[in-house]
Image (cartoon, rainbow, N blue to C red; front, side, top):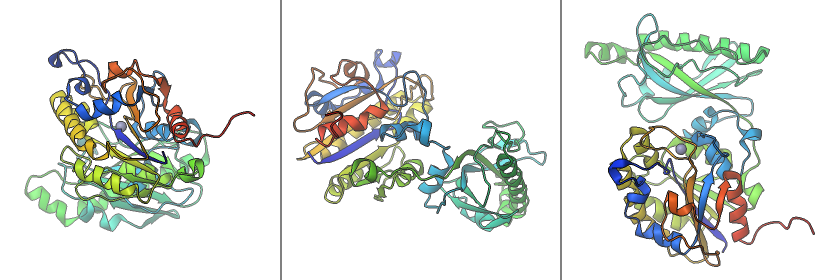
Length: 406
Ligand code: ZN
């Protein structure tokens, strides 16, 4: 085998749900294709970042790709900004950012400004602002979402989130998180930019119109997840595998870009429940002609978990199962299906519960597991592994592992 399709179903893992006869959504779903892949392959459970660690999607993906986040993780912002196609240079600091609604005393009324259709017309005039020698770039994402990049000298990502992550409280000031001059400088300049943006946004004629229509004004920038831009060893340099990414949501494209993977844009790949899974898997199959490693990210399993909607999660897993037939009979290709973390519907957030994994391809040692599910995979031949073990296992199955010792 020379090729890999690596499918990550975000937040796939779950816990037993009473209404599903104490099965998880994955166990309750009818998944004949995934079950066949598991039956004819090897399975296990992955603790993506470490035992008992409740991971964010950024660190869990980096770990699955074999990057030790203790060494390389410098905040989420850069991945979001890269995912929106922003240009980043070493030393920049990037943030995720929402357009939000605040009252005159900066109390947050709506963290998403009524989920405005597009942030672009509001933020256009903020892009390129220069404060104390620091240039601010801002670009729109989906709906109220944007990313902000600070470029200049002596910047630090050790600044707190101005976004308090809740409503009916006042927006916070960015604060330095260490005693460095750089963190103090970055926090000061960032606070000035936020004030400047607030003044400009209040004056924006579109907000005057929104106010007349009694819609929440998009009058404030809520920033979070400061990330420092540093180069890491590329995926190709690490594994000598040419790699590409098929994803809908910006974060995953950003992570892939940071590792030097190419991004394949697929029409209909939205990162939502309505994403075109058939188009994504067809694109993955076609990408094997040009790439050794194809990373496919599927987001909505996580969104269903965060909404606590187990029925929808089960239904969406069945959709994945139907579409995955497209890649289930390929020659010369190792199929890996797993998740970046669990998002139990009962918790509506990420948990540290390990996630199932299957690896299917010619020559793979088969275990006795016949279903793809949390408790079935607990009996799998891979056992319990951590995320950093996944790529070495893949390299071993591809016959590309370096011999250790003599
Ligand atoms: Zn995730």
